[in-house]
Image (cartoon, rainbow, N blue to C red; front, side, top):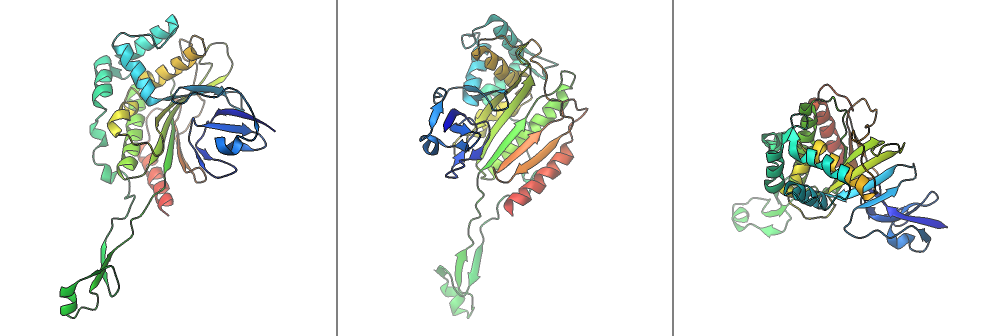
Length: 335
């Protein structure tokens, strides 16, 4: 059996041992076996090169689309280097000029160059992420001290007073397994920056709320585009991995990726880097996104992934509806 070595496009589990597989993690794959972790797939004959640990990865998926993953830490350093005037991370002149425009910002982009630099160095701290306790229902029940006739601790004063419940114990701490957040961000050029920003802020509140509630998340943002490189007649998907599961990181470090610059700076930059690493110029228009015409929030129970899709040409962001859907999903997860 020939197994192809590649990087996982999805957060999933090994079909043989059931171990967790993160987005971008190296796996073995075939149509017959599905995704296998490195240990379980090592017995097959692997095709393809071994990916370098900690580097960006790119490969063709079974459906023929070009899939690329870059970690936020690397993308952040590239954008900061551009702000400083260092363009060495990108080799092709046309691609350098594109990223220069993203870094400069404009009304259409939805941010200024000064804001971008401040968010990258100080973190994105918007008023919109305050009041998180009211944004989502409680994720965990607080531990409570219970008094019973059996327990872990004896209370002499209660026993002397004749109280039958003179022993106490703490309720068990509720644990919530890890959760993946996979959000697609791609809008038509005619979409108002205010609508794009409202969606990014909502994603920011969602991720921050879950992380601050103690839920270990793997967070990825994807930027799909058709003909991102001109005359390729292919779907390209550039993915920015903000945080891996079980990775200790603070919110401030990756919060700029959920700022108003998420799409029209960081997302666009990841797409240009994608093209540059393939030795090609990115299209001046960066192609076109999907023709999806609705907002959707869905929960994949088997993969434990919260998937968010956006309307490609929206007039406004339906915050109330998506927040209600989010609360319903979190109740389902708790159950």
